[in-house]
Each structure stands twice: as structure tokens, then as C-alpha cells.
Length: 467
Image (cartoon, rainbow, N blue to C red; front, side):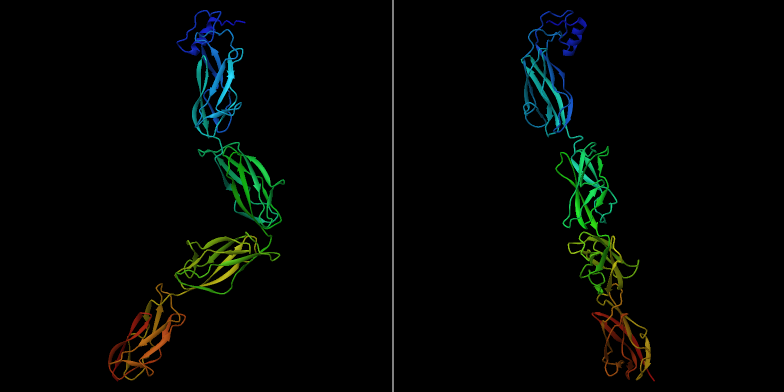
């Protein structure tokens, strides 16, 4: 059967083929094809490894714009995509090339075409003995999951059998950092070495949730099982090899915490304590609890003796090991000597564990003369005020137990501590050393008794007067 286009239809068809193919007022009765025209399937975009929405469609045509006639079926059309880079494959061949024969109307539709895993723009060419056409396509990463990140729910602990305070939540983003809506996220809860685990409200250790417009997926509420200990949960999404993980901990309903030692621990001011703080956590059955979070805190006034954990904080957390032990970071004394305490607490526990700590003064750095300096005594008599000095370290802390040597001159005006011009005395807890009574000799004049310790010294000025 011969199909004849009305003159207006011929004109419109001719215009669609280009300005150089104007149709005549009447179409010929016999009108063989001499070109190939693009009908549909160009200017499409598909996500990587996803199928394009429309198949490629071409048709045999004549440049005069009139309907073609004759035997139109069986003309071979080759559809070819690039062999490398951004491209795709045809469903029928699994390759970048597909061959299709035209139908009785001269139409050819390519098989379904799926983007490969490379983003970019490219062209697919359809060609036949009557010419060729080009389809413009783009493979995009937009809307495809490129990352999944835990945003809420990790690091939580709860008593066995209780519901965790926050559900698990992740965010899924594409390669451009944009939220991916409609992605299916699967949350799965694992089991720890102790048997600790949890289930989602309604039962089951696995659940799937779809991301919202912000790319976020939130699990149902999570309920701890009856076993205490740490465990993890994971979240994954289709097409992404990485997963988001959540660290969780079921702890016993009643926990007890104790310090590893109750002895007073000391450190020189400004120096690091020899050992960190350590605590042990046990449950109601006196079994060590693994995975419990212990908070160590230094109890100190704004001014006065104290310490900080390495890094400067006065509070730190640590997780118990398989023996139920938690160890704090290293502890550094401040520059003030004296005693203070530290504590260790655990969520769900009763009384805190307590540690007695003391900062001790450093090496003697200064010696300061006391009230006897400037005193006078008649020759042969005892000075009314005992000679004394105060010893302090570089931070002005009193140094206890330092050995102070008092030395009077060997010649001229001087005196004696009993029968010797030298006396050695240790400082008391306040850093004060008091010499034995000192008696002026028989020479009149002024002089100084030197008090020295570890390289530091002070002169105590004295005067022997006439009778």
C-alpha cells in the first residue's frame, strides 16, 4: 500500500529534515528512502550502570520530506557506542554494538541501553546504507550513593534489656556531596564476643529503611539483649562497598567500680605521675565487665594542688578491657605542692572509686633568711632569736626534708652552735630549718652566717657588740 502525505504534512516533514530538503507541493507516488532520521532517544542522562529511559529510535526517510515507499523492512541499522570511556552496553549483546533491522514502516528501535561505570558525555551513532544519526547521551554520578556515614547512635551504652536512647542514623551522599534520596539502607546488628547484641523494635537484627530528601535513613528503636558487653552494628546501601559502623555497649544493670590501688600516689610538681589511674568494673555477679565506659576526673580547686591528663583536660574516658580494667591517660602534676583526689565513675554504677594523689615539691631552688637576720648579741652571749631559713623549689613550694648547712665565719667576729661553727638541720614540712642556739664569740663586729642547700644560699647578718 502506498501512503501519500498531504502537502502541509509534507512541508512539516521536510522542515524537520533541514532547510535544504524542501518538499514539493505534491508528493511523488513512488518515493524511495535516501536518508536516516533520528526519531527518539537523544539528549538523555542516566546514572552509572542504570538503563536509559528511552530506546534509540531511527527511521528511513527521504530528504524531500514525503513519506517513503517501497520495500522498507529488513534494512540493517548499526547502533555503536564508544568502546572506551563514558559509554554503555546494549541488552541484547552485552557490548557497545547492536544491529537491528527496520520493520515494514522503515523504523528501527535499538535494544535497551545501560550506562557503564564511567561518568561523562558521549554519542551513540546509528548508521545504515542511507546515512547515519548521532544520539547525545550522558552518564552521571548524581543521585548515586558514593558514601555512607554514621551520623547518630554510635558510642551509646545502656543497661541490658533496655532501649537505647537514640536510634541508628546514617547519611548517604553522591560523589558531588549531594544527599541521595530514595536509597535503601540496611541496618544490621552484630553479636559481641560476650554474646551482647540488640534487636530493633518489633524484633529482628536487620531492617531496611529508605533515605529521605536529606539523604538520611533512621533505624527503628534498638533494644539491648540480656548479655553485657560491647558489640557493633552496621549500615550498608546498594551499590556501595563501604559500610557505616556503630559501637554499642550493653552493661549490667548494677555495676561496681573500684580503684586498682588505694595508696597515695606522688609526683614532683610539673612532672608526670609514674603510673596512670586504673579502675576495674564488675557486675552484680562479681564478673569483670568488658566494654564499659569509665570516666576519670581530677577533683581540684581553681588554685591549689592538682593535675591534668596529657593534653590538658581534667577529665578523660576509657573503655574496660576483657578483664574489666580501664586505664586513664598519663597524669601530669601542676606546679603547686599538696594533696588532692581523683575519681573514676561508670554509667549504672554506684559509688565512685577514689584515688589519693600528692604533688611534692621539686629540688631546692631558693633559701630565704628568717627573723634572726640583723640581730645583735653581746660578745660571749647567745643571740635571742634562733637562726632559721625557708627553703622553696622553683615554683615557690616549701621543700620538706632538705638538709641545710649553717656555717659561721672561721676568723674574726663570729659565733658557735654549741661547740662548732657549723650546724646541719633538715627542713620541716613547711620548708623551715631552725639552727641550734647560736652564741657570739669574743670578737666585736658584724659578720654573716651562711645557710646553704643544693647550691642555693642565704646570708644571715649578725653583729657582736661590746659588754
